[in-house]
Length: 256
Image 1: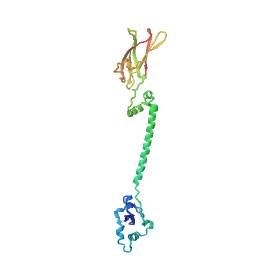
Image 2: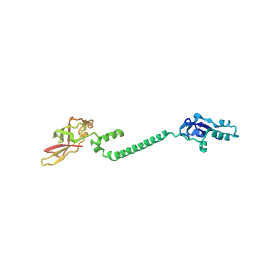
Image 3: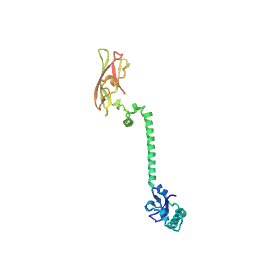
Image 4: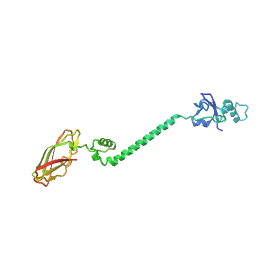
């Protein structure tokens, strides 16, 4: 038979009977069935076996236990005398569970937003990067995203904020057309060198366009990735072949 003990509530002084396994469940914490206060049963624990030895009127230890319980616990019901105990219910675990539940839903919410953002990035933003990254409204999003993903976006470019001056198109001794021009960046941000197309026209109004020349075609190899600073003017010169030998006019077109 499991060892049985007596303990008393320090608040209302009621005495209760406990077994060893009851003490092990909640580390000795119980709730008083009379005043409902929590207390540590081991603070006033008495072995019922020792007390039963003092009960001379009983012939067995079991009868002595019942006698001691009857003497020590007045006005208790049979249910109360038979293992009257309640485990301590700490409110902290409930608060912890609530807190963990909040964290769990916050994590699920964050994961959902992140998945939506990644889908939006890979199915819309990335395929349209070349165009949208030049827009002042979308560009901060690309800058932030690329700072996380390690990608790169092209420098901002606005063709309307270039000024072309001192244009000259001449014919060299070998018959090539030589272009000379001054390009100024009027924007308040650095811009890359633009692509250039030269259009020649004859006296009849017919136009003859040159190929589109990228910066690597008309700049030294080491400089074609350079940026033009705000307010800076640069001189550009290059030659190209064209079937028209006699032209009356020319113009330069900047291409993005």
